Amino acid sequence: MATRGLAWALLPVLLCGAIAIGVAIVLAAGDDGGGERRAAVPAANGDRFDGGRAHADVRAQVARGPRPAGSGASRQLARWLRARLPGGRFEAVPGGLRNVVGVLPGSRPAIVVGAHYDTKAIPGFVGANDGAAGTAVVLELARALRRSGRPAGAPELRFVLFDGEESPDDSADFYSSGLRGSRAYVRRHADELGAAIVVDFVGQRGLRLPREGGSDEAVWERLRAAAARVGVGAVFPDRAVGEILDDHTPFNRAGVPAVDLIDFRYDCFHRACDRLDRVDARSLDAVGEALTELLRQKRPIRFGGQ
Image (spheres, rainbow, N blue to C red):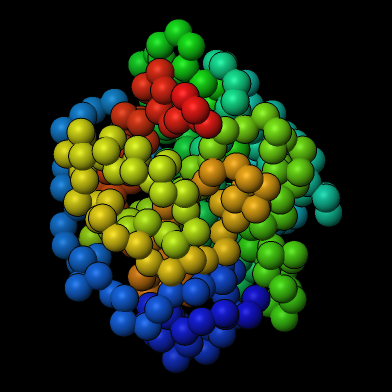
């Protein structure tokens, strides 16, 4: 995939020779947030989401080794994920891939919460933060919301684990060669959806998630407000960074308001050091509690004139 702009966060990666990346960056050089990423992640004041269990789910994925789309390890993982989502099922993705989908019933339009479960096809790369962390948050979020119950009339929630986010060809256009699962899902379901939230790099220590530049502002503000209510507002600073291409992009392009939760200032991006020891249960918990607080509401996101 070609880089569309030079981000300060990519300099260590570029210096190490990892030129091809799996997410297209359009971050402005120097927008480093004043070192916010290194600040401690506050403890959430809620206990509906279990960050420790989410961390265990990261461990279970990483223990399977590299999991590139279409590999035997990826297909085994998909079966494991399906068993852990409510009403879990597969949806076919062109090229022999498959998304894993779970649903909590409710009113339409539905809200998607998604993450990608494949890893970049790099020898020894296990994607603890880049793939496993977001997937683990989605799994535990589904558990938490199923346990806690939701008010009558709340929207349908779809938990979608995307296959094939990573591009198999770094020389090709990333949008057309990567994002395979999210593009397939949007083609099939866009008219059923009211919003989408994509969870990507959310496991590193000192997590900070400013609004990604392509993310819908209204959905983002609802999420920030929910984060503040559970004591983790500092993780979602009131500022924006540049736009990237990620699994939220097909939703936005189809007219479905979407946000991308990603702290791209991560020095192990597409490097062998993206291991379990880089993932912090408190970071997972902060994101999970904020999302649980948002999505347990009867009207978590305003659709149209609602």
